[in-house]
Image (cartoon, rainbow, N blue to C red; front, side, top):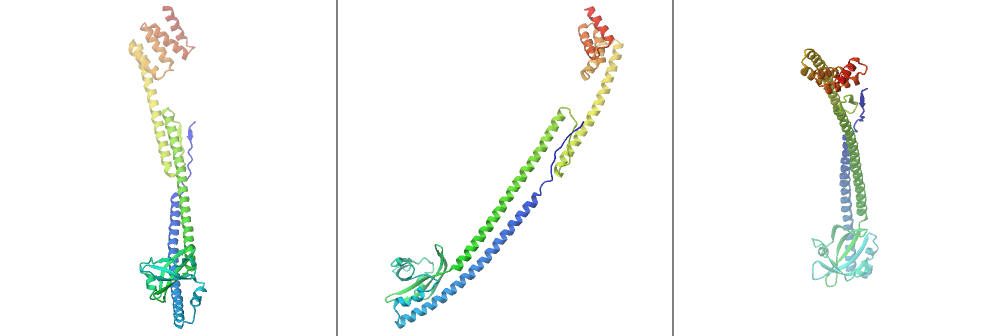
Length: 358
């Protein structure tokens, strides 16, 4: 009965579709990140400009108020800066005066904030010498600065001191900008995490599919190897199942076709061998009758070699050897013939005659 090796391969999972969808999601997420970043950048720019305009307006109001107070000399210094102290938008306010170096300024009065900064030196780190400009006219430092969780923008308002021009530095709270920036950072972080998860999931799926496909291919190779070994031992009753996916079906079909051709060739060779051995045996019988014992013995030896279970070949070879006087060899051939056909009386008579002669 023909043995069928079944190799069940399911259709390959559409890996290309998975990769395409993943790349589409990543592309959409990247575009979304870019769009959101642009929107938030626009919002931040707008909030930044609006905050600076508000600070400029507030600084101008304070500048006019302080100048009138200095002109009228009706208000004490502490009373002059009440609007600064009571303004909820002001984080810190202090007065500085320049030292000999244009970039160094000494804190002489703290209006609002930490009193311990009095007499400390403030360094102007801006490239445009903004504090020095603030000694002459209202100047805004557009840079958003942070101190812990506090976000602020500085403005510099000129004050006329007794000997030197002084500058009122006010740090204005800018919470809207900080909130927008936090939301932007949080959203971008979430989207980046989503992209990372998608990429990781895609890699895991691709690796899993590759392992499965590799395992299936390994199974096919093992079946092919086993089938080839069976063919090598002479067994041609073997075939691979071709009900597999299209790419591997070609291998199974080609293999089965090769086996069928080998079966056909084997049948032809077997037929030719049978016909040839029959002719050789008949030729040996004719040569034996003609007394050409050596040639006849050669023919029977060939048929015994290819058909070791042939009773007639052993018997006729024994006759040739007996006529040649090689009784020991003849006895061996007759005994082998006796094993193949124990009831043959002619063989028994030859055996008895040879033993009697010996």
